[in-house]
Amino acid sequence: MNPPIETITSPSNALIKSLKSLERKKGRSETGLFLAEGARLVEQGLEQGWKAETLVTASTMADRPHLAALARRASAAGARVVQAPERLMSKITHKDNAQSVIASFHQVHRPLDALGAAADGIWVALYEVRDPGNLGTILRTADCAGAQGVILLETCCDPYSFETVRASMGSIFDMPFANATFDQFNAWRQAGGMSLTAASVNGTVRHDQAPYGPRAVIIMGNEQAGLPEPIEAACDTLALIPMRGGADSLNLAQATAIMTYEAWRQRNFQ
Image 1 (cartoon, one colour):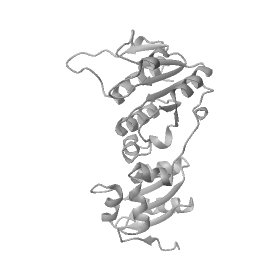
Image 2 (image 1 turned 90 degrees about the vertical axis):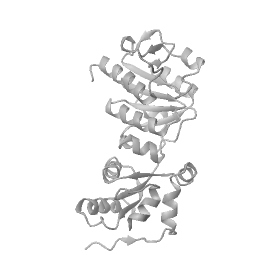
Image 3 (image 1 turned 180 degrees about the horizontal axis):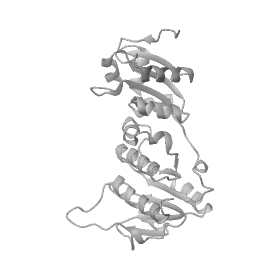
Image 4 (image 1 turned 30 degrees about the vertical axis):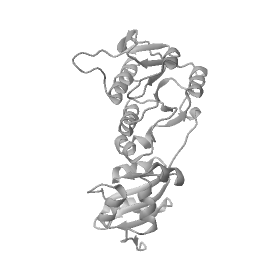
């Protein structure tokens, strides 16, 4: 018989306060943890071997077979498992109608060399991306396209923010990513024989005619400012995505998807 699961009912409980703090970057930096919400997302993290610190289930849902099995799995992996009323779940996530499972996971920080530099493939580099929704969506896109990894250059938004994790739809656990300066990244990609293609308004070739090559890095710029001139000068190809109509630009995540899928298409989706 399983031992009773700890129940928390007070918003002043130390664990609830700690989990609430993970909405802020300061709290994530101090603890090395981040939040994931929803049974599917939490299960994906556990399946991929990420270490869960705490798992909280809604008291009214905790006896459902799937959630009970998830709680047992997390507990067996060393996580603290508790129950809480839905009002406290909403306080943790800072939104109404929180999902029935929330977990805190330990962050993973990888070196550039962990991003599959020994193999052919596609990588995505992001220069000072600031929107967490865009970052999460790009992680998801890179995952769907089978990219080797995502490199976050210079000062990007936090990949472990609640908004990024949510927008990634689980790809935060599947898509390897690393932080680097541009100089570190450029030396790494040159040593690995990787081409560097940027999407740019200064593009000299259409994006579907760019020579991405077997080891391709696609670099995308900041949402407002794009890529600085020195970085564009370091690229092998500047590609232009055709546009017509009144809009003068694409959303960063959309443009990244267009570039990434074209590079993948040229590999015959292999």
